[in-house]
Length: 626
Image (cartoon, rainbow, N blue to C red):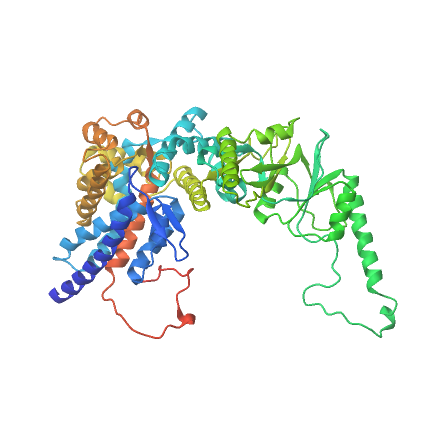
């Protein structure tokens, strides 16, 4: 037994060294006052980021356990959008507590107790010790202003730790406005979050070379393709549009087809390529005749059409946008409540979308085509140009002047988007759809801002997503009724209904860690690992204190001084909030990862010839690793 404990302790010590090394990396950027981490690629490109997931995945890790930990962090961050740094800090603190516990027990026994505690007791303790001090912010019950305030307080600490405090308020306000305009009509409020998260690739546009303060919301959808054929829509009549997902003109030869010259069959003797081409052009003319009968003037295509198609479109004065992505066409079809054309010879009214206008839009040093969902504006050019902030114009003028002084042969390439508007009606899918334009000084920074926007929506979705009532098992109910305190027994039925309440929030800055640590000591007597977890949570709180020069954060001080009188009004009076659901998922993920690490008995190092066929692919998982 002592030999087994010695082996387990040595392996755990080795694991702790690995996790401690990862902790030292992410600790530099932890908290709202954390710094940036600089990475350099082999190509010489530099990456500056504060994202914990981005930092960990950029590391070149050779040790299999280190890759396993990073894989767990990546999965958790992908599921909740947040918590990668807290994951590493809590895991490292928990493993340090296990070092002392392994003197009296084995790693396998500790892993079993940890797994049992996470499955049987953790939800109950959170229910008893945290939820009574939180605020239940349900979207369907809150007025719009209260919901807006709560969402902004959730986004503020997220963007502070992810992007820094410089532009945190501006980005939080922009995200709130974006979500308010993207509410799904006549549906559960969280459906708007689902809609934005699912269609985010088609709802945002990145613009590099422009300050982040120029980020804006544009009414409608932005299609990231240029006009292949463009005619200004000068009249104020509604614009008709049709979506094609395949080639309209039949091809003479497809991929893999064989052209036989001198075919002897009498049935095909009179057939020729010239006759086929004439038939193809005539069928194409019939398609355009059908489009003109519906008054169509805008054609969106998922593929690149033939030269004859573009020529006939120009002759008919129809705008053509080619190579539109599948995500953008899917969103366009949903907003316009139409279907793409499947049979070009049978175009129906259900295939024709009504638009308010369709015009080019120029953003930064890129020109795209923007599809906008809004009312018609008489002066489209003025509306589009109003997107530009004055500092953007001054910045571009300065760059022009700078390049001229250096006498460099520099040419700006203005990419274009398409701006299309759908007329409002009572059957609108989205209340007031807007596209998010994200600006940044460089491509890497712009991509980080876009990733932060998407992860913030995932975090809000985890917070507000309805999961239904979670019922405790009979065994957990018995544990709950065995509590000695009368208050716990009396509140058990109500708290049992909110074990995993997805709408509960608490003040950000360590309040959750202190509340849960206190509850673990009060209600976790039957599980020795509860004290270890309590000490690990307090260790994370100490890291938060270091962000405030060794003093307690406002949230920590409020919990410590007013724990008995803590109320929902006290929660909402704070400047920032965090989700109990996200914290709960974080704890479960850390406990699962720690359990897997404790089950490692020995690490074997072998020297073999590398075989690419046997290498672990990027999509493989560590779920089955024991």
